[in-house]
Image (tube, rainbow, N blue to C red; front, side):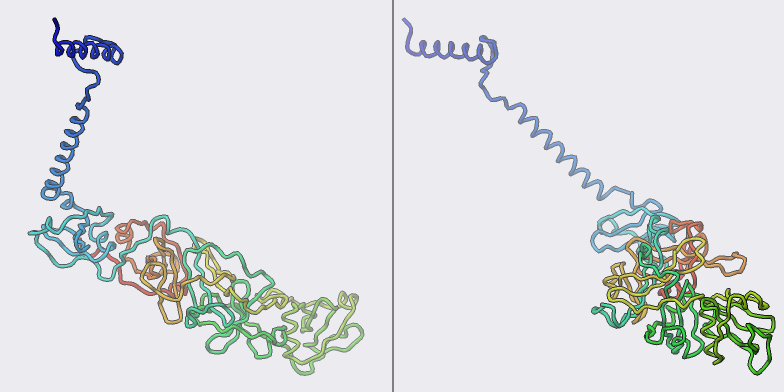
Length: 452
């Protein structure tokens, strides 16, 4: 007769076979199908331990045995204090800036950050490089785009943050949209109180105090501008009266009336002055200047009399505007600017109006702006700049080069070796008029001489 224990074991056995048949389709399996399988967990633990071991070994050997920082052309950076070195002849030579590192190596450098402990025991040498060289260099993409634009502040310009800044130079900006047209001009006063009309990329000096009144600008106050700003515009002919014959030299009879050499005539839309060779045509501007200077009245003649009269050489192509241009007062929120294209074959600068750049009143060393003078600010976008070529000879030979970085500083370059070491080529250099370069702070000479 079966005991109670035998009955329990038999029932448990039957229950196990039923569960095996339902779960694993195998009633006579050797293992309980509901038993928890720990093999996956154990395998995961082993893999994790193995990975931790590998990481630990890498940390130990990379800290002690890596020699990547010892390779030529490597800029070594101390992780603890940020100091930088080049390994030269078995010694660590301190380097102050990136430009110096490239000039010493002669090209691009690879940066390796190492712990101070790794550098223990390595001999130190004297600093190497060019003191004062830039730590920020323009990227290749930042060398060839944008214009040079120099703006002057005005008494009506909204510029409350720095009333002492009177001139702002932007390098690498997009061309201004609001440009002075052919019939527009700007009246300015130089520091020596000379008055100029800025028109069509040139400055025309008003030769006499009464010229502005005669040409219709007497009610407009000229804008006072710095001499450096005025130097950016090529000088054109002066707005001055021509030599008009004086005295009582008789001329031919015109339209039945006696004349004298130097008399003025008008048909209502055109103007003439009588010379020894006949009637010479004048532009409206020149007529206003000449007639005001001579004080002689103007006679009206008919078209028939004009056709019958002897003609002299015309003086309508003398470089001054044929009609006095419209001169407007400065507007609030914008400033008059001189814009140079900053590219090859640019033969002139344009007069434009542009909003004043915000933040140009201080130089904070961030690579966005800098003050070169208490009244001048220079702004260059971070990572941009210009490689400038200056010809020292009339035939274009023997050029010199400057590198302008995002601090607004112009660094002279000692030949093409220095240009190549910094990652550029002489073909990327763009000519810029010297007057623009005088607005920039001059940096130290960048040269590879004596560094390698």
